Image 1 (cartoon, rainbow, N blue to C red):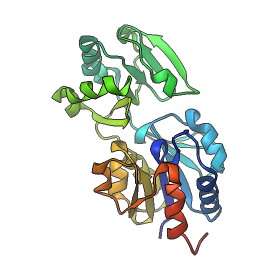
Image 2: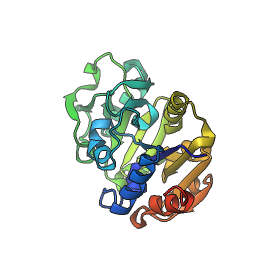
Image 3: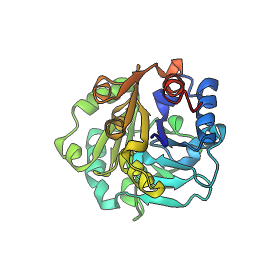
Length: 268
């Protein structure tokens, strides 16, 4: 029996206007009222998506969010950290070297803020991520703390050739995923959304047979593949569709609601 519905945001739950449609909102609120855990899964920190959490009413003591692509599982109300997995400053050195040599922008995130490196070209990440502190800093001055990920954010037409030429060293050292057309993320090697969901399922006393996931992109692949019900949007990437249980309508056609209305017909 499905007891957890986990949802990617961009190009999955959110439409092209970056909004949760009324239909999607109503269906998820009804599931939540029936004691189905509705869990948002994102690469962003929780404060950056707080309006979406409030819109869906995910503000009870038993509500959690998967943030930083699985690197942090956080309680929506208490902000208690259920699970955390990150990198140390020394782990970032290959990326810092790459950014300096190739003259590409680089943003480094801990679990509270974004460090926008000012000794490499400027990033567009600030236009993408809201409601979080951005701090200008030189790469050599990064504090000795735990980091969640690093980001290359630039127009898609400039990012694509850089991704094609990524050194093997970076692909081996990090879990590198393209989360949006203009964003390449470098995560700790064991971090993905499914890692965070496994910690949450264990907390709830549940397992993969109780999990339904929705996604569209490479950073959703693990949770789509592992879940009992792994659903991919019609607009999803071909390689993600290959591991799906089913394909639903696109993010602009309320694909989440379409599938949930059918699957949970007797419950709704």
